[in-house]
Length: 177
Image 1 (cartoon, helix red, strand yellow):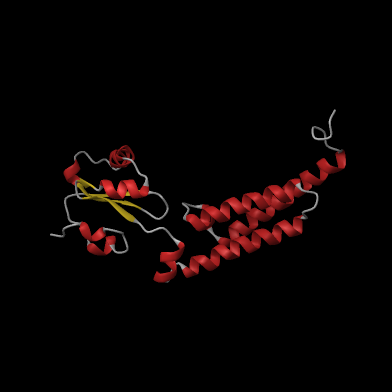
Image 2 (spheres, rainbow, N blue to C red):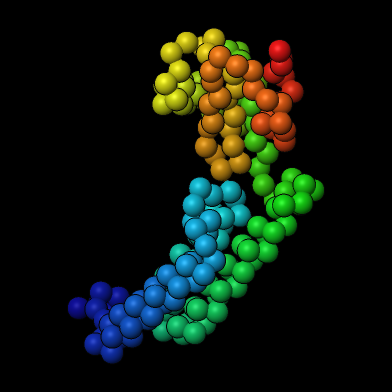
């Protein structure tokens, strides 16, 4: 059988041991860094998730990468994420690091230009309206594409408080009554 199909007993033992150790280390570091690590993700969080998966896979399958090296790499990635989480609290840094939330509907009006900019379809918005139990377009006060990619639907019989839309691109398009 060709070499690329088979594996020696010692290499399988090394892979198994590495997988168990690096996986346990990943669980420990995620517990320490908190729930936000792999929750709804902004761009940076997604990058850390992908990089963590690559580190995990490389540590498990590569004979040249030790468990300690993989563990250090995971700690560094999660530390970078923590530093950026602090930087996000500052408005200027947040604008550089994160996507800007964008208004997709101002009241019952669908903002087609914003849908095009964000590559969100009218059908996506309608699905979110249904999820939010919106029965008529005139119930909608605002629909926002959040920095995480979620779509938030604000609806009801009252106007939206302006502060809820601060920082939302085109949030000033709503008339407050």
